[in-house]
Structures are given as structure tokens and as C-alpha cells.
Length: 433
Image 1 (cartoon, helix red, strand yellow):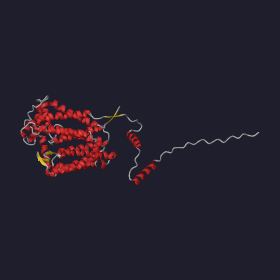
Image 2 (image 1 turned 135 degrees about the vertical axis):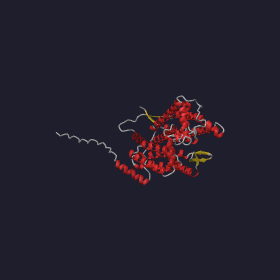
Image 3 (image 1 turned 90 degrees about the vertical axis):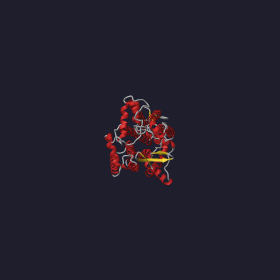
Image 4 (image 1 turned 135 degrees about the horizontal axis):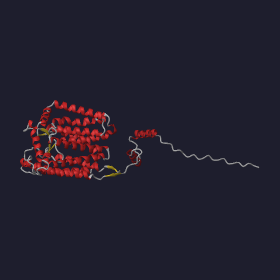
């Protein structure tokens, strides 16, 4: 009987094992590609989008649903309300001086309304322009502003004992207004480029010292101390928000203050500042000179009481209070609308500032965040400083009240800044909770 032999069994099929990609090898290949071709290897569009989404999503979490806002309506409404309110109060505060200076009560208000419409056009233009497209033009804007600031030193017009004005085409303006904006845009760009290196001196503090330091000597020659405080203060807060080291920030600010004091003490600016401080302590030291405006301003605020004398019924604006339509317009607001009107105005300012920082918190990128934060920081500091001067809480500095003080250039530039804020708000990312 033959034994039946069994067929040999086939070995089980071995499935090919997919080896894990060697990251070091892939990186070397990419570097070799870049060295040969001269550009970085571009990943496929789909892969790039996936990598971007993964980078923005925290580990272990699912991507939160996000909604995009076409335009921040509350911010726009607050801006328009403040512009309208400011025009009404500026007209009320200016018609007596307008009649005295130009023979018509409508000179100042007609010019201010014209610039308000110009500012409205600028605001709309920047609203519908992607704020990211401004990046390539920031260095050119900074350089042009620096040239204009230098021109003030040589051919500037003197007014109020200070040489701060340029005349172009019959229109006078202060280049220092442009300098404040140039510093904000330049700081936002520098912080955006620094990325996570803001803790270092080179990327966190040095740009601040260079950008602000360029304008400080020129502003000192113009005796424009309010612009120095406003510009340096805004830049310092921006780099603090940007994540700079507190040690470096404190050291940089200390060095800046020491340098500023040295410059003041070695020039005739020192006596100018000292006179302002003496009058701030007691305005009646010079009641017919530097202290006159402060005294008349305090009279206006006190005579307004709780509910005011009524719109258009101010007595101090009848040629008693110089600059009643400019730096001291808040005094007229309090005199005509009382403490209630003054508080209402401060609440409107506070609402706009809060909404502006809310936009900064929800900006689509770091450049937008820093730009919005810088614009609103400057705005907030300017409001605080003007109110402090008008109420004699700080020495006279010559700083205007946003939206309310007479000044076509400042109003136009301010509304252009509000347009940039609205442009940022159009790209806000609001996470649904």
C-alpha cells in the first residue's frame, strides 16, 4: 500500500510593510532641492492647507467652529456718533473766535466739515483695503515722514511759540501727526517679523529704541513734549503686548527716560518744561501768561455744574478761553452740557476704546493684532492726556481731543486709522462657544 504524500503548504503571503518616512532624509532632500533649484520646495496646495490647519489647532483638541464678521458695526456706529458729536461741539466752541478772526462764524466749522468728509472717504478706502497689503509700504512711509519732520526744522512755520507746522499748497499740517502713525505701523511690522523672538533684546527692545529714537530729537527741537510722551508710550505698550521681556522693557524705558532728561537738561527745553510745571502746581503764579488758559478752563468746567448752561450758551468761549475750539473744547462740553455731558462723552470714548481692543484680540494674525492695539493705545492715551490737561491734572502740553478739537489733518488721519481698524474687523475670527 503506497503512502499518500501531502503537498507542501505554501508559506503565508507576507504583506509589504510601509516604512515610516525618514524625516531627516526628507529634510536633506528638500535642502538639496533648494540648493540646486534656488527656491524652496513648494508642497501641494492641499498639503499646505492641512499643515496650516493643524498648526492652528491645539494638540488634542478639535478645531473650534469659527465665524467671520463682514464688518464691525458697533465700532463704525461709535465712530460716526463721535464725529457728529464733535462737529456740533466744535461749531459751538468756535463761532465766537471765528467771527473775531475771519469776520464769519462759519469759517472753522466749514473747514472742519470739509475735512470730515475727506476723512470719511479715507476711512471707507482703508476699510475695503486689506490691511495686510500695507506691509510693503511701511518702510517708505516711515522714511517720507522722517523727511517731512526734518523739513519742519528748516522751513517750518512757528505758531504758539513752537515750530511744528509745514505749509503745502496753502494747507498747514503737523508732520508729527504722521510720525505717531508711522511709529505704530513700523512697530507692528517689527513685532510681527520678530515672532517668538520678542524675549530677546535684539528683536524685542532694539527696534523700539531705533524707531522711536529717530523722531525724539526732532520733537525736542519742536518743543513737542506731548508727542514724545504719546509716541514713546504707545510704542512701549505695543512691545509689552507683543511679548517683550519685562526686564529688557524696563531697562529700555529707563535708558530712554535718562536720555530724554539729558537732552532736556542740556537745551533750552528745560526752562520751557520748568515753567509749565510751575504753572501746573499753581496756575495763579502766571494768571495772565501760561496759567491763563488753565484758569479759564477750570472756570468753564465749574460754571457748567451738573446739567450745564445749555448747548451754545457757554460764556468762556466768548473770547475768554483761547483755544476753546481746539485743545480746550472739553471745557466747553462741560460748561454747556454739564458734568452729565462730560461723563457721556467719556463713556463714548471708553466704549470705542474697549471695542477697538476687542477687535485687536480677534484679529486674523499678529500684524493685525499689533496694528489695532497700537492705534487704540494712541487714541486712549491722547484722550487721557487731553482731559488731564484741561482739568489741570497734568501740565499743559498742547494735545488735541480726538474727533472734537479743530484740525483738518488730525481728523482726516484719525478717520483713516479708524478705516484700518474696520479693515481688520472684516477679517476677525470669532470662535463659537
